[in-house]
Length: 325
Image 1 (tube, rainbow, N blue to C red):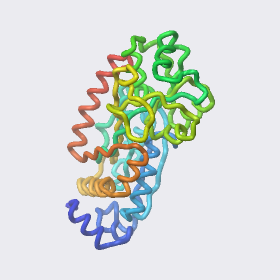
Image 2: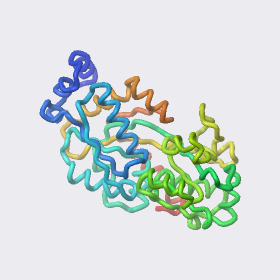
Image 3: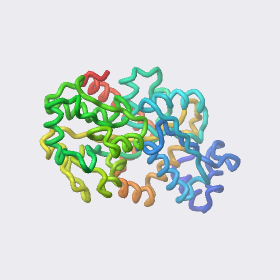
Image 4: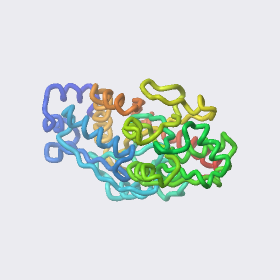
């Protein structure tokens, strides 16, 4: 079995991606040096950003010789998940990016497939959510947003990711906390962050909720106004209060991770965990996390599997409470 120490020793000795690949199990042999990354979402969102950042770091650190990214968007990942389970089964060099959003979407959509059917590899990052509005919005503060929501929630459409995901959950928690019934909310789900951003910039919705990283460039450019973040405390370099500071007693931390397909060998699973650990512990990954306001929360293998099971139960309870499950 390939353990982390042997992998790091072989990496240091090889010094080139092709040679590094040859030290993995057969799926990483010289004849198939690429890692395939499956993104069950449209380009532009948080999962897509995670996949492309992984690709960049894995290549830069010479941990792989290349990768191929496949996007299949729709319904919080529940459109792509069956494809990953059925068509990618047994591919020991494949990874699917997913996270809290998919857990919620599986429950809300009563999907036929779930994350017990794939192979947990690693939890990678956590990210607080951001509540934003277009730059010309009449909402200057989170209090303004809440006042409008209380007055008539049907006139405050909010863009976010797929139904039942972290964005939808946060919107529901905000509404519940300020006394607005969840069924009256106008939530507009999108398959990818790029589509939600376009709706915001085109003033097709009143506000948007997503991971801060998806809105940060537009906030810096002045195209969007950041009203509040769902973190537990103020964040360095971000000029916005937390929801709690704004008088909304809610905090939420979205997580993202990677899964291998079903049917892979124990050796392939161990090799993939070793690969992802090496990436996640690199200086390059730490730099990307800092630049994107991601918090590294690495958890691998069986510990990650246990976390996914427990978080699925927690999210199901929240969605039932909000009338979304």
